[in-house]
Picture (cartoon, rainbow, N blue to C red):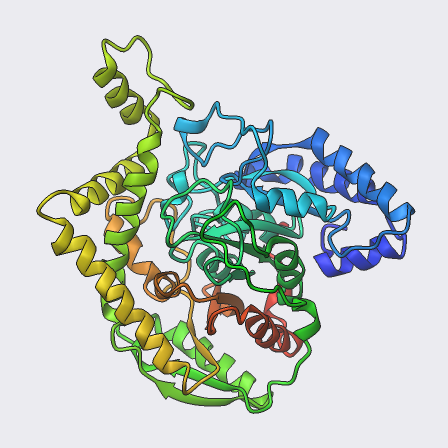
Length: 483
């Protein structure tokens, strides 16, 4: 049963081939057996999962038949889950049990999804490798010596290893799409505001967005359907109707205009990945798409702008973790200042401390105009580039990452080299656009992803293109050896 996709599980449950309780027990046993190799989970929620599975079976017995009813999933451990540890991968929140459910958690639970647990992640979602977690690094199931990508690496590794069919994730600068590329999955970052951020512990509020990680575009469509929608609790949520994402999967690609930015094919891109990107372009041309070269001239400025804006917002968001109200508190503080300093110094890891310091500096008097304000102006230029491009094309296609997954620890001494791996993904976050990564081949036995970007609220178009591509290729069906 562990090889079934979400769509196949929905059909199997509807046809009474197995029950949600049977499936849940089988996957919990598989996680217990195999996850010690991967470290993809922080918490398992066996009791909750079995309770939800039994309730889902009862609902099906009464005639309900939703696509997510009885389907097992897991949540990235920054979505608040009532009464269950929500750690954000940090010592700071190791003892925190959320008093409420995040909107995403509540919506999926209402749809009947079964929560198997909370997945490992980079601390406070800060990282590209899932090595900054307080609970240890996550391993890539395709090669246990390599990273799975971050910050949603736990969700990605668990789905890729067939421990469960799909999981929630978040994307601030590529944290859904990059791990999807590194682990041979389909990952979708929706338009900013499409999925509620209420109850999602913030890293950078103007960039964070929740989305699905799964093996196929069809499964991403099912999970996004359950996650998306307006939420009055979230001031950044957009009141836009949610279409039926599954209904548009089979649309023809005849005449679809695909743009390939010339800036993507620079010296930093592994030429073998470039070849796989162009092979995917040829596959889509066979399906009727029309391809043209385009330009995104301000892309070169995106990384420096992002690494000013994101840490600046992080330094503000993380100021609430002070050892006073909740979370980690140092022992025997001498006074209030000592409490603040030691609680934060002991509770936050090195990468989080680094970004807080960078952000506080960028926002400080005398530097705000030079750094933060300038970065926001660049952000507007990046958005304008996309708006101009989308007058010529329907979709933008390119590599998800410049290189395949690197070895564990390979970039620890040089964090900037890890930041550069986000070069193709962060522009979508700066502009608020939807982006999807889909499997497109392998380099040295490690998966490679191709990224698709679309205009605002065109997630259905991305899923349609990816689904049609997956109907004509088999990269997404490959399974890592041993799993």
